[in-house]
Image 1 (cartoon, rainbow, N blue to C red):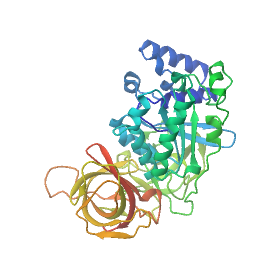
Image 2 (spheres, rainbow, N blue to C red):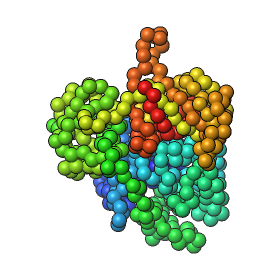
Image 3 (cartoon, rainbow, N blue to C red):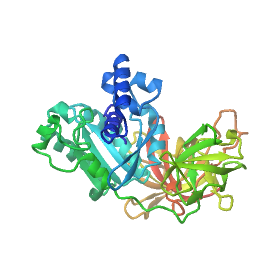
Image 4 (cartoon, rainbow, N blue to C red):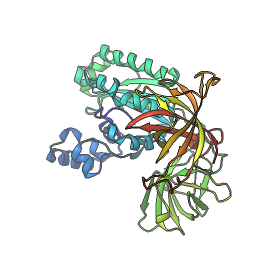
Length: 433
């Protein structure tokens, strides 16, 4: 789930879980009472996902919340990502674990425009999820009750977004638009309430659950070696240390020994949990929790990758990548300092060489050794990691686990940020060292 801050993502999710019976009445009443007491009554549904004290006090999502729900044909894991620009790194971590995007936009006049215009998060989030390999998107046009279920407003928003989605590389056949009110619960599971009467006069399409049920599961890299980038580490109650993440390739079984990279440590898988159920094995595409033993938790960190000792992930400090430059103000030059994002890891790096600009459609080289890269350019560049401190040149950069896109698509995607904005996204081509 993605979208601009205050579009209603967490409220939509909390209400949907309630409508599907995943949140009981006792919890709903407790959230309602607690949010009213805190002077945040309009956030009562969001409290189901925004569970930390700071999130509840500020009324915004800051970290990734993970929930699962069932539709008639699908088991869906929902990652509620933060919309506020201060928490884009957390949003990237969530998007890197997703197969499909549920974009929530605010239909209120002025609010949609604030999110969609330059500086708003709607465009950036769509570019980010597309860059991370997501091609299916459901657009939930929320808060339509606030504009009296105005059909022309819904169609205006759809028209603006449809053009941007096509331009960003989303296939129109995999894009859906749906009118909803998260707060009132209209068109999430049904349209039987009195609040839905006006909407039903002009809309008789699917509900949100209908659309979730029709999502196509992408192909999984099951035949590849096992890869799990760690997105969270925690202390298990009695089962060793727990790590969570989305499996990017292969299969893992209980009892298997895994290597942790970077580093020389290995661990044994004691338990595997998928959607709070203990399972004997898990495969690529699954968001899983692995409980590990025979390792000191100090050797497990967010961004590390678990893999088989017989087929380890390459470690890289210098590599080439094919990138697409976003709508940036300042061009990219050789030696530009950047922040490199790969799954849940972000590290300081430098664009050490501009190798060539490429034709966006064919990938053919249009110019070798360009001086600068401007917005909309596709290019091949060399990226070198930097040491993370300012203590002088003696410190060398620490390598990170990375694979070429041709070997493993999920392990070969990167994002580049600078000065608090995402400036480009791309794929790893070759690891140099």
